[in-house]
Image (cartoon, rainbow, N blue to C red; front, top):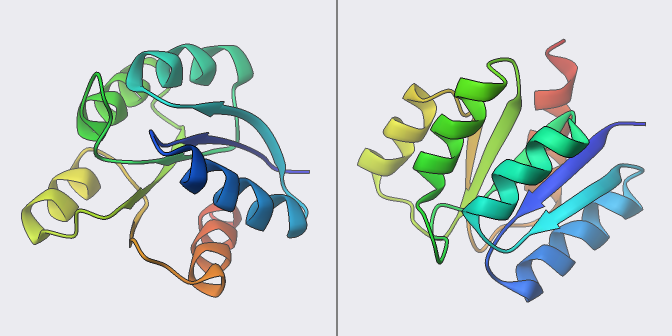
Length: 121
């Protein structure tokens, strides 16, 4: 079973993603409301995939992405954010994000992107 870490400052978003992914058969190994917790949980839980928001209270998702990639270069990260500016999207992909989902999203879109990301092994 593939293990996923959810990073989003919104409890509602984390819960929504958790329910979607759990229903689809994934195991949620942790939820982080901010960048610091995200970095700690990424190290502790070693998930197969991380969903990462760009806007976090203590950090930007891009900085968290860089931190995760510096520590675990092979970690799969998908950005899930309401920020859909091309500059940010391109930057995230340059830093190693596999994909970028703009909120609001459909369950189909999330599951499709997640399953695609986890296939690339």
